Length: 440
Image 1 (tube, rainbow, N blue to C red):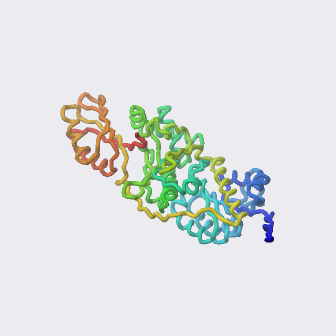
Image 2: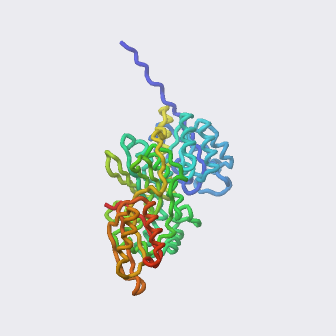
Image 3: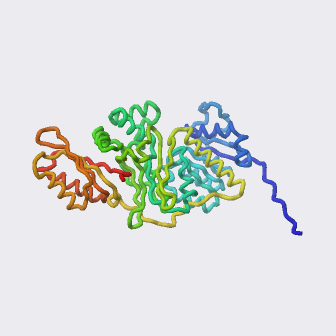
């Protein structure tokens, strides 16, 4: 008879959690740790103990959080050897140095810092792998929507071909107000700021920086390829006009700020953020207000949609806590989660090689032969026309022309527009161009 050695008893000692930052998200995380210890203990298998909170101003009054937890020495806290360090400071420094110090001390890390991951992700992933600890970041993209883990784990056996979505709630709120209430950009932005959906300085949101950072993270995960934030083509929504919104409506579309990551023909990846017309029958078209949604296409699973609140203290804290429990379970079991895989090493294509449909609108002379000349320019640059819409212009001598193209290279569209602009005897006003996504 073979003797069976019973398993060693699991320690009841608490797992120590250090928290870096106590703003909107950090305060929610702290309260959840302090207010629900029994539930968390049952889910993890051991208690979680909040050992300290690193902040700039430890003497500031913070409701329902013991003052003894706060410290100004965030570096000492990060390097204290806590089982798990949660970083919700944001920005590049000191967050990068603090996370590296935590990893060096043997701590697993949970972060919500998309800007840092977009700029220094490979460095942090490599450090965590070398130290044999976890680095989890579900909260860095799309708030409470579980998208990182599906890409990192659930779909890792499939081949993802496209990730496209609305990943910034502020811009979606603004564009939704422009669409449903006829507001101009400035009016819609002011309402977003009044309601707390936009910062006093909204640049990161409205110029697309926030969405570009998230797009780089999603592309890196989906395509097993290192994509730096600086490689993402970025356009914001400040130039979207009420005329663009109206043109989209006439075409049965709405305008959204999209993050798009896709594999193109030569096995490069195209990663970009820009406004686009989205047909009303596409799932992303119905995403309203400050919500986020991410549309994933893969070889075997087909089309998948992830929808939910994409920003705010509670949704982001929910994602942080989900990672915290997962990382804590890994510590209890003596294991860690999957590493980042960049084995494909695909090149990132410039925006000129992106392929999409465009809608171009222009004021042209209303006389015989004009349409033929314009069509000739499109043909010269190998851009196929899908549809043409002509309306009365501002004067009897002018007409408004709207042209929908089939899928074409961005560079060919740009060359077409440039040549049309040079034709003063045909085009008499500015040419506006906006991409079209999800057109069947």
